[in-house]
Image (cartoon, rainbow, N blue to C red; front, side, top):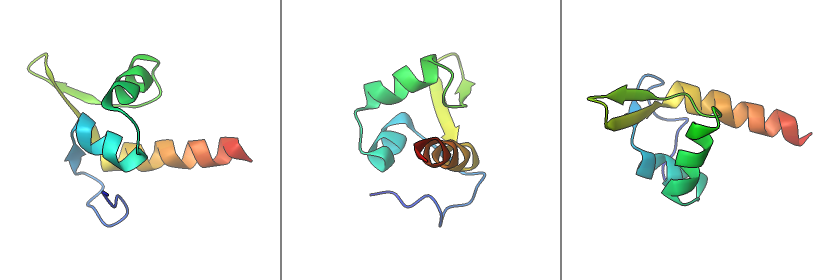
Amino acid sequence: MIELKNKNPLSLLTTEEVAQFFQVDPHTIGNWRSKGLLKYYKFNNRTIRYSVKHLLEFLDKMEKNKN
């Protein structure tokens, strides 16, 4: 499992790495991205990456919405 808190906030992760962290299918990450829930970077019109900083912000929002 990927540990986000120990990574550099500027690090970029693949869809597969993000899915592994959240323990969901990569298609779920794509759905979240399409719904505007996850910020991402797109390179060469095909390569998608997610910053650790934005993922930690997303995780924080999810935890706050739980309560």
